Image (cartoon, rainbow, N blue to C red; front, side):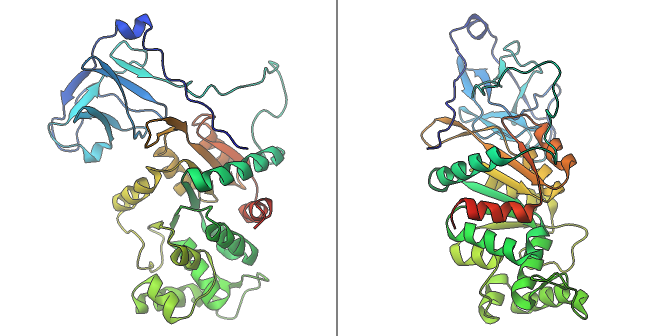
Length: 361
């Protein structure tokens, strides 16, 4: 049985906490502007000494600021600050300014290592068999006790087996939200509508005559119907990732790009509206699996802390996996800290098919 690591809160009876000053609060001078010497958040649990109490920031995001309001700490993007918001100031992390950053709350156990050893980073030569075993158990646990958010690039839509595998994960409750771009939805729906993705047969990968029109025809047809749900109903679509999301009520956020064709009706053209919608899904996430989309992965990583405060007040770890055929993408996310991101260097189509098999779907 899968078990979460237990969270150990700081020992507030220690002298450094008892003698710590109160955190200094300064009003934001203008909308969207923090006061001088503002404190920027990390991915770790952070506590603030205010009113004689050590308050934990419950919904955190790195590179944002802590605002004291209604007796709690709110973590806010700079662009959402309002004039007069009481912002925590101070740039120390060990109680000197009434701020404590707690990086070791989950006590990750690490084996002793030699000073010199081969293959310490994650690469295409790494054996990921143990990672798969851990993910199977984690997903079984999270299906009933957490929220699993998938961050997806369009690679899945180019292969029939990968589309089917992802659909099975959705159907069986292993997907609680999807964050993606216009391309994933476009090529997945193209696969259902015309059996191609970017004009290539999703079964044989052969290019079809005039296939370069297919994704444009798909977008045009969806826009004719006015929505994806209406398109699915009217065109009698019965397969694919987006079809499964619509059928089983799984929310998906499509963030737009300057490169987009169309785009499809639900795509957010405003980058900050897309960011808000993505963060609304991440707020409740307990496991994030990001696959084959560098920019969406980095964006999601930047808004995902290493912990989540649950409705019953307990603090638990957030699991973050980055799956990509590029070592650069995987290791960039892993640099955020071992608690927050684990990399798997592999073809994402193979990865999701293996997940389906490992979960017995």
